Image 1: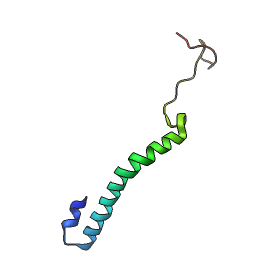
Image 2: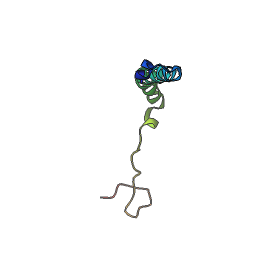
Image 3: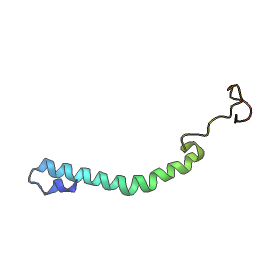
Image 4: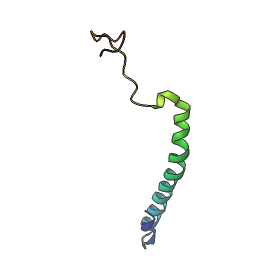
Length: 67
């Protein structure tokens, strides 16, 4: 997106700069620091999907896992 900055139109230069900075911020801050930090804080709740509930033979949701 920094390629937009080589143009002569002021609006395109500004757009290229803002999009490029946002892309770098997302790459180096959000994805490397923020996402792992949130996953650490949430612990097991951050993993999806969860394990399925154990069901009995009749499917009521209680008891051992059916074979």
